[in-house]
Image 1 (cartoon, one colour):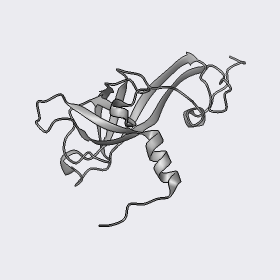
Image 2 (cartoon, rainbow, N blue to C red; image 1 turned 45 degrees about the vertical axis):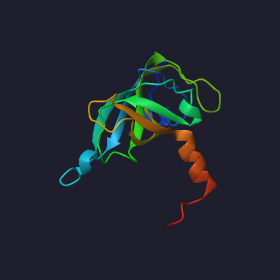
Image 3 (cartoon, rainbow, N blue to C red; image 1 turned 180 degrees about the horizontal axis):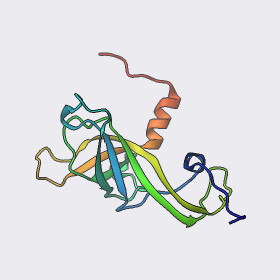
Image 4 (cartoon, rainbow, N blue to C red; image 1 turned 180 degrees about the vertical axis):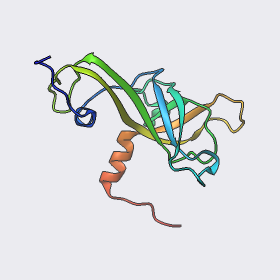
Length: 147
């Protein structure tokens, strides 16, 4: 094991580039139905990516997810989870990492903004605005004006 070296996962993850894919697990991290009192942290609701992440439905930078979401979750962060086991990963600078024995990488997919259909038993498809839209909005420095 002289050739092995260990890094904190955060060091590796901060520089990793891993694409999302249809059927991948996602987590909506928020407070469904306004459940805040007494919770030390938000609720993590599981779902899956239901539309191709590289496609923009209706020409808008959004992704459909399959999840039983509820009122109060709009504005929640949506994370993807990647498990990296025994392989190298591509870094943001284009280089390749040393082989990683095991790591879990959570990345921000976007922001949850509601679901399709008003009735509880309809398609259960949620809408997530892609991360790039959030980053562009913040970089633009523009804020909504009160009515």
